[in-house]
Length: 182
Ligand SMILES: [Zn+2]
Image (cartoon, rainbow, N blue to C red; front, side):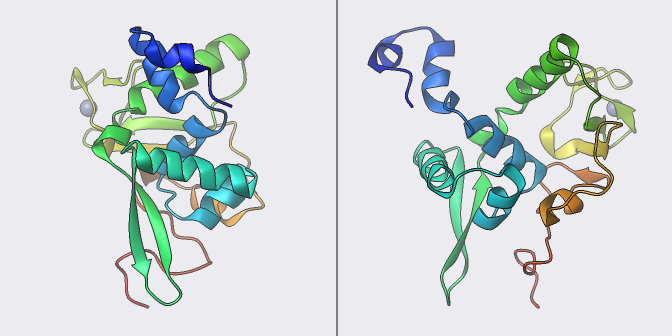
């Protein structure tokens, strides 16, 4: 459900951002896309999201220029959804939400994030303490944290069990990864 028309006309940039990403499930779709999920079925099984809601969110995020729809198979036609730079730019917001959730609501981290170049864990604000710089998303490695279930039921979670680079396309048993011939 949208926040209401008043939000769209507010000048507050938080309200305007929420008009784009504030609906239920939307940020989780973007989170999974940052983890490398690209395909409808993979979002579906990993999120446990209703089909109609997922279709709606993918369409809306594509219309907003946060995801780009790419045809990866012609017969039958199949599309995947890839984060644009505009979408990748949401990483710091998701990172901050994750840190806040763990600090304020508790629980063990399911995943930890590291500067790939030097192997240092990122600070809560996404900087590398060793290099003293904010780390670009493409230079971040994701590693399993203590809260990650060792034996997940769905193939996407299994694919995300090991260390991997953010945005690296997820390969599930359902089919080959994009750009790799069978
Ligand atoms: Zn570093």
